[in-house]
Image (cartoon, rainbow, N blue to C red; front, side, top):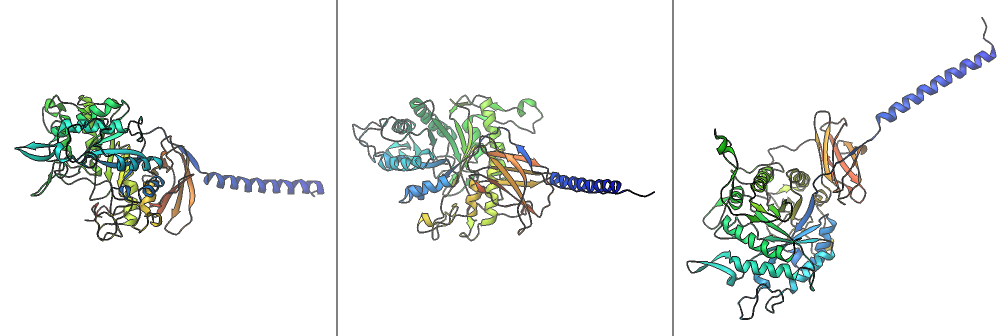
Length: 496
């Protein structure tokens, strides 16, 4: 039977429409397969960062140093309050140690340093340390490296009053008690009960000035040591003694012996517990000896802290926080035996992640800029330069400012990070095949109010892939390889 012209036209139209529909459906399928999913992050603890550089922050370039610290994402800065330099070297009859206005006190240098930090938008952590000779206790008629408790309390009151915001000095509300008191070079003889008395004396004075003030205790050296010239007590043993708790014997058959319990009636008064978890074998490494605490052992320290809170061994006006007030890795270059810069950069992001998931809400990095020559201090975020303004940033700085990690699992990629602005943002996750491919967006994550973003991405990938994060105001994170470095890599934090 013949086909009319009209029927032929209809037939052609149907074929064209079918082809168009097929083509459109194929395009829609491709678009759906390339769609970028958006994930959301629920509320979490924050991760604030801080810097400590006793050289740059006290020298002629301190104002520039504080600005560099703020640009590296830090919101806090830790600085020593040198009691022996602020107080007089000898006592006069009219000196009142608890009165900051006493004419024998010298606050000028400290005031200008605190003022420069606050002008850069940084919150100071004032660490009281280094007692003058007249404030040292005596044993057998000889001075020992331990302050008189009453004198420490008086000086702490003077510091808190001087920085209460009601006088000419800036307002400060965070005060730390000593540095690494489990180390004989800082407190000798090393005695946890003595340090508890020091903490309580400072807390009584500081809280007496303002209820909003925070007192930071701990700041412990991570390793126990017995030597001819110096020694230190392992931090967990020191902490248990300080907080009057026993964690029980986990291997004991008796439930009574396994149960944590209080060992004395004394209470410690503080609002923040801090530690210095230097690590010799990567960001998840454990210390070799029992009761030492490196990065991988932080959950154990947190467990002791929680036990002490449960047993009411800590008195605080606030919820007790867990901080790290000193941590870093030296890098190669410039240090010959330190971790290569690229590895140290990855480790920095992973260390921040490890500390955060261990309950740490503030991390202080030691070193803004490498020191020149043969100095042992080479853990800066910047390489050494004659002028700090011209100092070249290490990749470590990017990892510190915008930490991002990604781990390949069973069909998913677990990612975590904190954007540099520490606020709500849309963070774009990008993937690259190999080291020279093109970046392609594979997911978006809404960070929470603290800037934390995390998700398990349903994205196909292999160990050859690299991921990075991007966010407004943050730029790009470092590229993070899905191939994990060998666990046998072992570099000390100080290049040893």
